[in-house]
Amino acid sequence: MISAAARPYIDASVPVLRAHGLAITTTFYRNMFAAHPELTSLFNMGNQASGTQQQSLAAAVFAYAAHIGNTDVLGPVIERIVQKHLSIGIRAEHYPIVGQYLIGAIKETLGDAATVPLLAAWVEAYDSLAKVFIAAEKKGYADAGITPGALRPLRVMQRRNESAGVDAFTLEPVDGQPLPACKPGQYISVAVDFADGRHQMRQYSLSDAPDGKQWRITVKREVAGAATPSGAVSNWIHDHVVVGSTLLATHPFGEFMPDTDSIEPVVMLSAGVGITPMIATLNQIVRVQPTRHVIFSHAAQDRQHHAHQVDIAAAQRLMPNLQVVTFYLAPSDDGAHTGLMNIAMLPDWPHAHADVYLCGPTGFMKAQWQALVLAGVPVTRLHREVFGPDLLDMQD
Ligand SMILES: Cc1cc2nc3c(=O)[nH]c(=O)nc-3n(C[C@H](O)[C@H](O)[C@H](O)COP(=O)(O)OP(=O)(O)OC[C@H]3O[C@@H](n4cnc5c(N)ncnc54)[C@H](O)[C@@H]3O)c2cc1C
Ligand code: HEM
Image 1 (cartoon, rainbow, N blue to C red):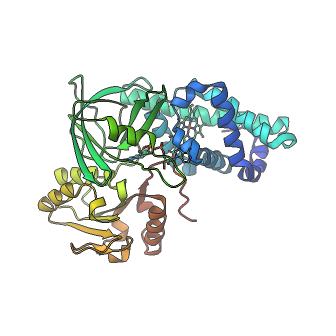
Image 2 (cartoon, rainbow, N blue to C red):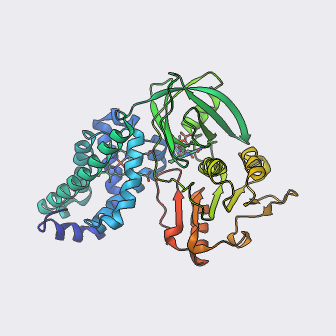
Image 3 (cartoon, rainbow, N blue to C red):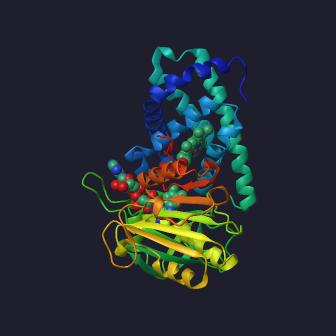
């Protein structure tokens, strides 16, 4: 909570921050990285370059300013950020650094409008939010039994091509000890040291049901576009990692955890490499609730771009109530619908009693979310995983 004296300044600055949010966070990152270059190894410099991380932090600042003190609204936002921070190894001593440069950027961007009481109010607001994060992250590390940022060497036991530009890697701990418990839907961060000295981490959802012995991740090669470079970590993995290689990875984290024990119907909608957490979920349901009514729908460019067809076929043999609905952009003669995913083509399900899980590119997620809400699916039944900073405002 913040003091009664600070509150009016925070409330009054919401529209100002909305107008200047991107400029503030861009200035913040520029100044912070100049003074603390060591922090670049924590941040996804691809997101920095493409501007998505700047927008995400701006969005979080707005959410906080608009809903300060309202933990019902902020709770889910904070939980996602905390899980991401845990996966990267953010520590309590990082918060004063971020606070100093964030307040400094507000001052630099707003100029004369950044009065002494307004800045004092934001120091108070930031400190109170930082306290919430620090406490939640301290608990998260303690629950996981790890020191922040701990990396574990994992040996690559298998590498399998899944679809065009997408390979699955099966990993086992080098130390021979069991893997920690985790849930389908969660992700690990893989750390890469490049030859030029850069260190970067990226998150990869586990793409198989956890069994305590092995993890599997499925990585899509991010190819260069007309105006964008090829992805740093995904290409490094594709180019360097073979059976017998060692990868460094974190403990699994993430708040997207489909309920695999429930007996209610469940709907999973994915597109592209967004299939990975869905396959982990499907493979777990095969093990624990094989008679459950599952609608598994996936959209891909064509059959050559459809990963994990082997897992889906195996599940179909074991799950009498699994309904698989596939959409390919290109016409095909194997039962797939042609075109983008259209939820009107899915079998019916009881909207009030089934969770719907979504994962895929931004456009796909927005289109499906809006279609589902229009079709009468309660928002409380909708859950999503975003493979990047979550910038999605589904109401847009
Ligand atoms: C929770 C979570 C789970 C995920 N699960 C998976 C998964 O299961 N499988 C999977 O394949 N991926 C997954 N991802 C995505 C993954 O973490 C990486 O983001 C992805 O592999 C790309 O990383 P990269 O280093 O190859 O690309 P980056 O180097 O980070 O580049 C990313 C994008 O930014 C663009 N870019 C980079 N530099 C610039 C620049 N200077 N100017 C303009 N644009 C630029 C690139 O062209 C590229 O399109 C997940 C992400 C999250 C957050
Ligand atoms: C109150 C303060 C903070 C807020 C509001 C905040 C907000 C956010 C948000 C919104 C994200 C994106 C989450 C997502 O959707 O994936 C994020 C990720 C991240 N945060 Fe924070 N954060 C705070 C403090 C910190 C601190 C102290 C550090 C340490 C240097 C830090 C480092 C990171 C990193 C490295 C990521 C992932 C970036 C990426 O993958 O591009 N954050 N944070």
